[in-house]
Each structure stands twice: as C-alpha cells, then as structure tokens.
Length: 344
Image (cartoon, rainbow, N blue to C red):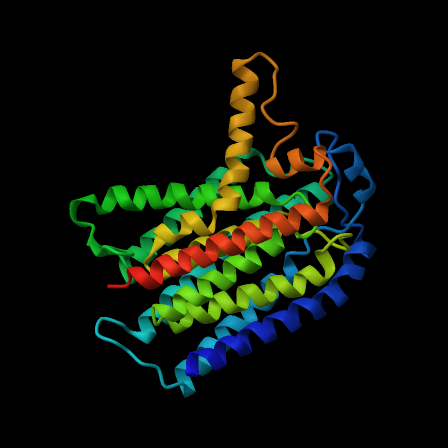
C-alpha cells in the first residue's frame, strides 16, 4: 500500500510536470529557433516537419528527476516498507539514484548533440567517436558503482534464482557495459516517428513498475512509475502531429532509464524482452547495411530503421505507433508473468 501510494504520486506528478513544462518550453524553443533539421536520407514526406522544435526530452527529464527522488524521499521518511531478508531500502535508494544519475548523464550527451545540430548548425552533431567515448565512459562508471555499492557478486534469473558471478564477474560487467551502450543507441535509432519512442517507453515503464512491485523493490517501482508518467505527459505534445520532438536529449535519457531499471532490480536479463522493440529497430539497420554491402546495392527493407519500412509500405505514423506500442505492451506483460511465475 505504501509503495503504491508513492508510486501513483510520482506518476501523477511526473505527468503534470512534463505536460506543464511542455506548455512553457515549446514557445521558448520556437523563439530560439531550435528546430529539427530533416535530413534528405529520411522519408521525403517528413520534410514538412522541418523546423519543429527539438530537445523536448527536457520535459520528461525535469519531470522524472523531480518526481522520483521526491517520492523516494517521502517513502524513506514516512513510509512503512516491508524489508525481507537480504533487502535494504537505503541500499536500493542509493542504487536507484545512481541509475537516475547515469540516465541524466546520457541526457546531457544528447543535449550536447542536439545543441551542436540546432545552434552550431552541424547536422550530424557530435561525431560517432565522441558519442561512443561519452557513452562508454558513462556506462563503465555506472557498472563499477553498481558493482561496488549495489549488486556486484550475483544476478537474478527467473526460474533459476540468484546466480553467483564468482570468477565470471569481470566478464559479466564488461558485457553489461556493451549491452547498456547498445540499448541506449537502439532507443536513439527508434526515435523517428511522432510519438513512437514515448509510447513504447511508457509501456516499458509500466512493465518495470509491475515487476519491481512483485520483487518488493519500492524505489524501482517509483522510478518506473515516474518514467511512465513523464512519457505520457510528453506525448500530449509529441503525438502525431508532433508539436515538439524529444531529440537525442530525450532518446538517450530514455535509453539510460530503460537500462538502469533492469540493472537496479539486479535482473538485467529482463532488459532484453522489455527492450525488444528497440533491439529489432537496431538490428534492422545492421541487417540493411550488411545486406546492402553483400549484394552490392540491394536493400533488404524499403528503408531502415524498420518503422520507416512500414511507412514506405503505406502505414500511417499513428498505425505504426499503435502496433509497435501494443507489441511492447504484450512483451512487457509476458515478461512480468515470466518473473511472477519464476520467483524463487
């Protein structure tokens, strides 16, 4: 009951802040002329979106970094939390705040990228090598801190239970860094249609919230709820036709959030199914490039990432968002059932 109350509070507050900040921020972005430049490599009909303000991810970033820590603080001060053997509210609070800090740093990298694009008028923003250096540095720092203060010696797998990492801990942490960077970039690639990533991440947040609640992890439950609420508030402005784009500021932050929620519950294996839609988007790009090179110019998809393929097939943006979001919701529900029946 305590966790549910503060989680609902975090979700509602995050929603309200995100929506209200949008009302204030969008006119400012227009005034500063922080509009999105639509590249020629995209669908031709996206050209009419030229000039739509970007960096809108600031809306849900502000919402989440206010609502989640506030609700967690109140939970620690006034809540009565059941602490089973091996669980510590203070430890989870610390780990969740470390994760939120990591996601925020990814948002900062995205902001730098957006700023260079729209202010410095360099369409490609940060170079690929610069992005990777920043992204790997952030992921390494997070994994090291999580290993020291959080879950460095074991991980949890549904139906199997806790797995001691032992001598494989270093390999596990290296893989963790690679997975985090990969998922963050996958979310970034998936952001190409009005309302798409915001809707998908809303359902990802709901799935995490349900799972964290089942695992008796109140801080992760609150952070997941804040994520869902912030995305929903953003969608008021981003759903087709979008009045603002999240930009790399938002997509990199959301990528970080999707990762830290799984790692914060010490169950990173659930990151794979919950992030499946982003992963498929990323692999559609990899397959397209590989096939193009191997066949000397032939294309596997009409366009990649795969949401653009469906656009080329005649699907509307709204239909793509509905189908992809429903897929995310179904996979999230199945993942929650997997965890529920696999609890040990």
